[in-house]
Length: 203
Image (cartoon, rainbow, N blue to C red; front, side, top):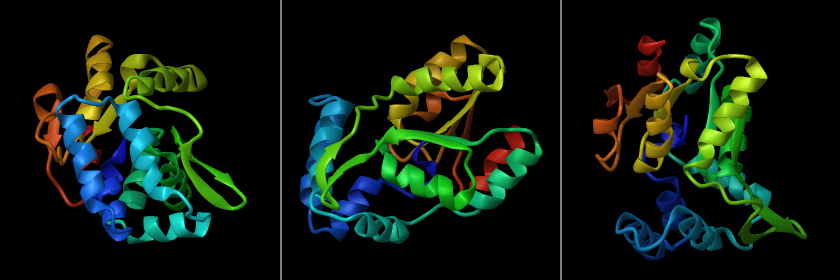
């Protein structure tokens, strides 16, 4: 799964909370127009977190609007021998908190760099949408399963590379609430719901 646990765009929500909404919206538009790639977008948007403490990040996460039934969904997926993980090109700090709170097995994402207890506004690595494929393959090796056993649940066009990869290996793709309306045509299934539990029917 990617950012489907948060309703809408977490960077926009955080920027709004921090009084930097216009800055974040402009970056989003530049990315949609392909004027900047995901790596450059993430480098620039990370500046909104500069000077924040870990406690500030946690507080911002708590304020983000979440999709319903996350923990319930993970419990049911585990009962069906599915390993729920978060792979995101978004903020890894939020992915880590979500993993701890809601029972995901793993997460992979770029986390903020901290010095003297405060964020520098930089990330510890760059995670492009294509990098999700590399990590997904690593998961298959770890759990000794075929790549065709993978299912990707995505909510934005950043999920397209892993969707294309899964089509090649006969994996499964689910567009969940496709906020930009650009991903559903590439997916096996498309859902609009306020509950993550809606994906369970496909496992």
